[in-house]
Image (cartoon, rainbow, N blue to C red):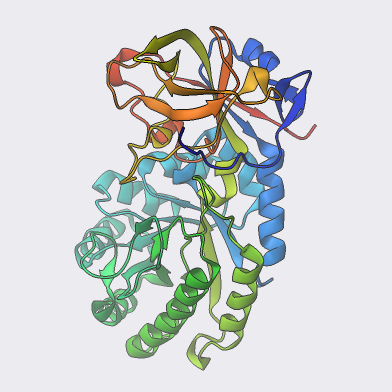
Length: 410
């Protein structure tokens, strides 16, 4: 038997069947049609945003990073609850613009001419990733007759310790090395563009409040240093994200209150040159991951060399991260349950596998579950972020999963 991560709070049980947003899983599956299906509980997202804002300093803006879950209907519902949207592609830009949100920023290396044009026409903030991108964007802005809004994405000399994915420190494809930023800022200002400040993202998926707090202190200090060296105070600084969620065994939820308290101290103690600078954090998975569940039906139960395999109609083509093939070095089990037997005590070790013809397609590796049979529904948790849109849905030609939102306000 191998352990699995903790099942998030907020899911109930009625007559032995798991509920999401107060609705029974069997009813949700019946309403959606065939499995597999992603279900997102909007009330859990709404509650998470409210709790986060209460924990953070009141002057801090909270942005949603659409890359975590770009489902248009969900983004439309989240947009009024946050202070801005951050995008990383032309497709995400279209989703963000459709919400009517005023503050939209566009980051990411390799923006195409078409993407730069769309962003400049829409008047969103471009987080520039290189001097070359500045040159291209200025040329396009001149042709359009637009005054561009530019921020500089900074590649800091530090990274977020303990983060699942390090975005700063050393040679990186993201952003401009800190030493070159002041000259670039001066070039932006000299061009007549509207300089909007810095985007400094050091890492993601960290559960250590002290590490996040220290990174934010360094980020604020770096923003002051770069402003001083450029001879102009940054109007705005995006501190990035990094707030993690507990996916795996022994993961402990982030102490977000401590992060907020330490960030308040760092902002209060910031250098005079950035006294009037506005600050934001950019979060994706922290807002939506725990609110999503991937539901897939058992189509076959089989044994091989004494091991039980529950073969489902879903798999890694929908939930690549849960299969362990989305950036993890050592495969570990996401939280998983038999949704149709949610209150039945676990008594059997089984591996939950998908329908793809590859040994990589494994959603649960030798996990302890209630005995499951054909037509039972398996729930894979932590599916609200980097699920459907981060998985190879066309792999082997199986159909895409449905997506459904519950807990919508009347």
